[in-house]
Image (cartoon, rainbow, N blue to C red; front, side):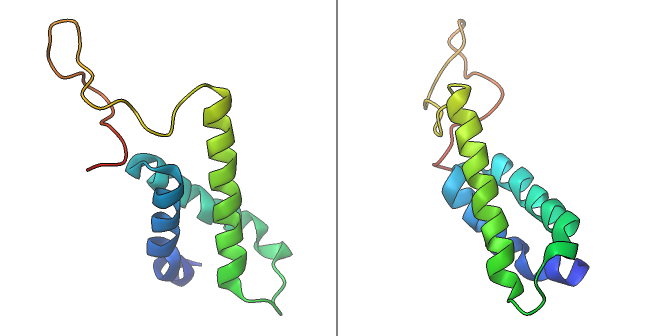
Length: 99
């Protein structure tokens, strides 16, 4: 599995980043994709290609994350330039999408 992780990590990460719009969220989702794939290897049809199977896991996970965020009322993008009461930049997560 290690070789497969090495081969597909960049592609899965960039897909997650494109769909989720946040580097930290994409990194977490990428790890989760490989965990789900590892848990499901016994159900993988060896007559099929691995890449489309893995990327379908990634698409489904991104869709689940987006649904969950929507239910919680979280936007894909955070407001840019929010400040705290003292006028300083708010600490924590940076704005998403433009880095």
